[in-house]
Length: 138
Image 1 (cartoon, helix red, strand yellow):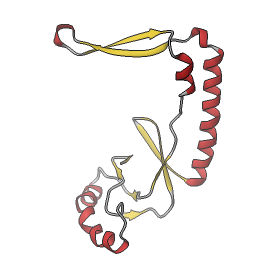
Image 2: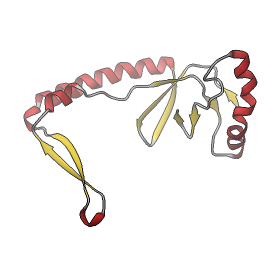
Image 3: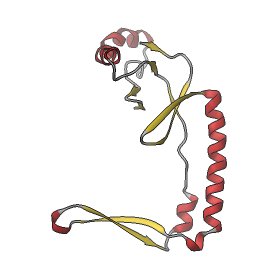
């Protein structure tokens, strides 16, 4: 498998999908994200009287762990101020391929062994670690 030489950024708006993008796309996404954050905060502040704080606790009816949701009118402004959209994350070591096919599995199995000498030569702590496993930056 070939290491991708381009600077890539991972963006995962949900836990079910992730996308790698080059820096020029990442810069556009960061601007959109900043605009989105401002608009969300403005909309929430404009409607603050209609909002509730979202809290939860655990209960154990019949020994079964159960999440119980609570809504209240406290702390809403602070929660709005803390709102942050997910941002792209720089991933220095990304390889072109699929970790689920035979070639990818073999690559992952031998990855540490093949890169130990490269790691020693370059004296980089992260050169010998897998950054992209199953579509997630670790």
